[in-house]
Amino acid sequence: MARSTLYEQLASELRQAIYSGELGPGAQLPTESDLMYTHKVSRNTVRLALRELETEGLVSRAPRRGTIVRDRRPLRMRPQDELAGLAPGAPRREAFLTAVEGEGRRLSQQIEVHIVVPPEEVASRLRLNEGDSAMVRRRLRLVDGQPYNTADSYFPLDIVRDSAIAHPPDIMQGANRVLEALGHPQKRFVDDIWARMPTPEESQRLQLEPGTPVVVFVRTGYDPHDVPVRVAVSVLPADKHTIRYELER
Amino acid sequence: MARSTLYEQLASELRQAIYSGELGPGAQLPTESDLMYTHKVSRNTVRLALRELETEGLVSRAPRRGTIVRDRRPLRMRPQDELAGLAPGAPRREAFLTAVEGEGRRLSQQIEVHIVVPPEEVASRLRLNEGDSAMVRRRLRLVDGQPYNTADSYFPLDIVRDSAIAHPPDIMQGANRVLEALGHPQKRFVDDIWARMPTPEESQRLQLEPGTPVVVFVRTGYDPHDVPVRVAVSVLPADKHTIRYELER
DNA sequence: TCATTGGATTTGTACCAACATTTGGATGAT
DNA sequence: ATCATCCAAATGTTGGTACAAATCCAATGA
Image (cartoon, rainbow over all chains, first blue to last red; front, side, top):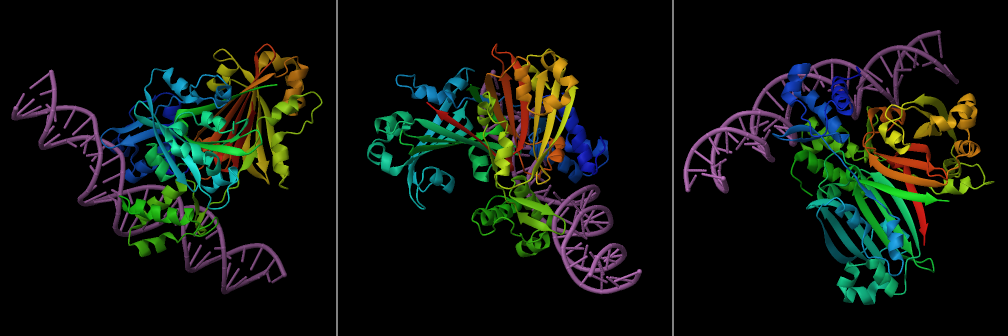
């Protein structure tokens, strides 16, 4: 158990207690003062150890409340469900909605529509030239009033300009339908998935605790002529999401 | 720009310089002493700021070398390629290998085969009872001698016992072929993907820098009777990997 | 020429002290 | 009973000091 430095030893000890289940989700860790006393180290050393656990996402700290073991029950996302939803006449139900409501939790969305110069990541996927604008539908999804994830869909201006701008509500409900009506049904998806630590803006918007990475999910939709017509960028707090794909041969 | 605390202000300022490209990958940040002097703050405050950037994965620190902006060029993983490889007569090339070698990088693997009681996560996917053992093939993959990711495949003992244990080399090369030969070809895959911060063991094994999350990729393979015959758990350092799926309707 | 040594620089660890901020819970008034 | 107020407890921030550890680089010596 003994590691090199004092604070690593202390962190290791506490971590063990958490992984072993001795300290379950929600359990209180000793206060900083207690740990100073019981381990005969300075407060700085205690805080170094606790910070390590915090950045690992194991514990959460707050004044007066103390340090507690974090809990996490992730929600499962099924990116393939959207494909089924594209079939003509399929229910318009969104995958995210059904997944959440099954657990009897209350959900809501905040939607904004803007015209912006998209980040390079998106621009290249939409095959836009440097500096070209696109329409973006920004969504912040909330579960029980708490921010859950974000989903920003970008559309090339020359495709959606006339219709959707004139009728924002159209694009706000069922972007896929609108694309279809415009003669650009999505026939193919390319999904890219990676993870990173959140930017401070994301931390703030999604109310992330320290030590929570985000999974970035980028879906590019192509029409029958293989022209990219939509890029959806979702930022998913890693402690609340898993993604599932099913493959058959 | 001004945020609440001193160290956040400093972190924010440096972060800005990085995101704006003013400090590109590999660029040196000022030393702690310089920052103390130029910003008129204590070393503690400087270190808090730098640590924040480090846990965000933006910079890397080392004695004497100083603090430098990190670079990352992720490799793309294509989980669907394994499906194609399962077709009879398909090339035995592993997706990971082709992806890496295309860039002229040298790669190697370290493989061990053990019989263990798998973690609950794996056990439930293999429908094992509490405490049941399984065979595991542990792989650590290296690129240019540097650890790149891990891939541990678990197999139910009652399926692989007789063959593979007697002939470890079999299972070490082309586990899929062996399963097929045993009458358990994989007909269906279920892939689960999530992310989290690494455990200290993983940090050590994969030589991760602070602020690097890992993506966990779990593939469960089912035979024609829908019996799970293999669970592959990959741990992918997030700064080095992206995952791509392609869907067609 | 080449290996070794040693100093200087830079980050890492550990300690102490003081005050700020947040908030759970008790207390008291309505 | 309910609500507002206040106190105390806990973490958060910032200042300081001292020494350790790593490592680049130049000086030294075989």
